[in-house]
Length: 71
Image (cartoon, rainbow, N blue to C red; front, side, top):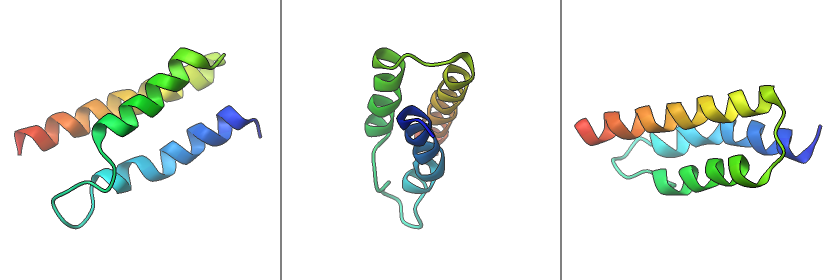
Protein backbone atom coordinates (compact mmCIF):
# COMPACT_ATOMS: atom_id res chain seq x y z
CA UNK A 1 0.00 0.00 0.00
CA UNK A 2 1.32 3.43 -0.92
CA UNK A 3 1.99 6.08 1.72
CA UNK A 4 -0.91 8.20 0.45
CA UNK A 5 -3.28 5.25 0.70
CA UNK A 6 -2.05 4.59 4.24
CA UNK A 7 -2.54 8.24 5.16
CA UNK A 8 -6.09 8.26 3.77
CA UNK A 9 -6.93 4.97 5.53
CA UNK A 10 -5.59 6.34 8.81
CA UNK A 11 -7.67 9.51 8.54
CA UNK A 12 -10.75 7.45 7.69
CA UNK A 13 -10.27 5.36 10.84
CA UNK A 14 -9.49 8.08 13.37
CA UNK A 15 -11.00 11.39 12.26
CA UNK A 16 -14.58 10.89 13.44
CA UNK A 17 -13.72 9.19 16.77
CA UNK A 18 -11.39 12.07 17.69
CA UNK A 19 -14.07 14.63 16.89
CA UNK A 20 -16.89 12.88 18.75
CA UNK A 21 -15.48 11.78 22.10
CA UNK A 22 -17.67 10.94 25.07
CA UNK A 23 -17.07 14.41 26.54
CA UNK A 24 -17.78 17.73 24.91
CA UNK A 25 -14.28 18.68 23.72
CA UNK A 26 -12.86 16.97 20.61
CA UNK A 27 -9.54 15.18 21.09
CA UNK A 28 -8.23 16.73 17.86
CA UNK A 29 -9.73 19.88 16.38
CA UNK A 30 -11.65 20.39 13.18
CA UNK A 31 -8.84 22.70 12.05
CA UNK A 32 -6.30 19.91 12.56
CA UNK A 33 -8.23 17.52 10.30
CA UNK A 34 -8.95 20.24 7.76
CA UNK A 35 -5.21 20.95 7.50
CA UNK A 36 -4.40 17.24 7.12
CA UNK A 37 -6.95 16.82 4.35
CA UNK A 38 -6.01 20.09 2.63
CA UNK A 39 -2.37 19.06 2.70
CA UNK A 40 -3.22 15.85 0.90
CA UNK A 41 -5.20 17.75 -1.71
CA UNK A 42 -2.48 20.37 -2.19
CA UNK A 43 0.71 18.33 -2.14
CA UNK A 44 -0.10 14.80 -3.19
CA UNK A 45 -0.56 13.50 -6.70
CA UNK A 46 -3.85 11.77 -6.02
CA UNK A 47 -5.56 9.27 -8.25
CA UNK A 48 -9.19 9.97 -9.06
CA UNK A 49 -10.33 7.43 -6.44
CA UNK A 50 -8.02 8.93 -3.79
CA UNK A 51 -9.26 12.43 -4.61
CA UNK A 52 -12.89 11.31 -4.28
CA UNK A 53 -12.16 9.72 -0.91
CA UNK A 54 -10.37 12.80 0.44
CA UNK A 55 -13.15 15.02 -0.91
CA UNK A 56 -15.72 12.82 0.82
CA UNK A 57 -13.77 13.07 4.09
CA UNK A 58 -13.67 16.85 3.74
CA UNK A 59 -17.44 16.91 3.20
CA UNK A 60 -17.92 14.67 6.24
CA UNK A 61 -15.69 16.95 8.30
CA UNK A 62 -17.63 20.05 7.24
CA UNK A 63 -20.93 18.35 8.07
CA UNK A 64 -19.69 17.32 11.53
CA UNK A 65 -18.43 20.84 12.18
CA UNK A 66 -21.74 22.39 11.15
CA UNK A 67 -23.65 19.90 13.29
CA UNK A 68 -21.46 20.61 16.30
CA UNK A 69 -21.80 24.38 15.81
CA UNK A 70 -25.60 24.08 15.67
CA UNK A 71 -25.74 22.08 18.91
